[in-house]
Length: 115
Image 1 (cartoon, rainbow, N blue to C red):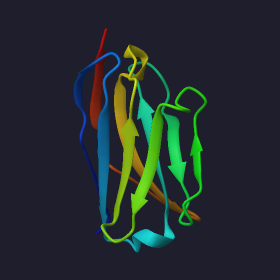
Image 2 (image 1 turned 90 degrees about the vertical axis):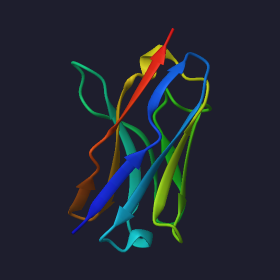
Image 3 (image 1 turned 90 degrees about the horizontal axis):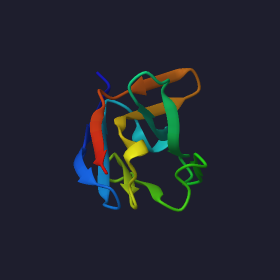
């Protein structure tokens, strides 16, 4: 059974930082591309950042320079370091694992940034 379990969300003031973690089980983590997505109320889910199995990264333009995605294959975990948070970053953040036609999602973790 595949599980992606996110943690690290919470309430933070604008300008603050949070570090999200996503622990994976039931998959060969190292061969999956991993990503973080978010969904704000009334909006579609959008890509925040992604990292390939080789470690190449990709960021949404709104996050470049503020967010950093990383992975630890030994711990089957992907991280999202979020700095200089803005109220518009408020959303549920989801972890994603993808390999070919195989896609898995976590249950999400709430991030709320107060102004």
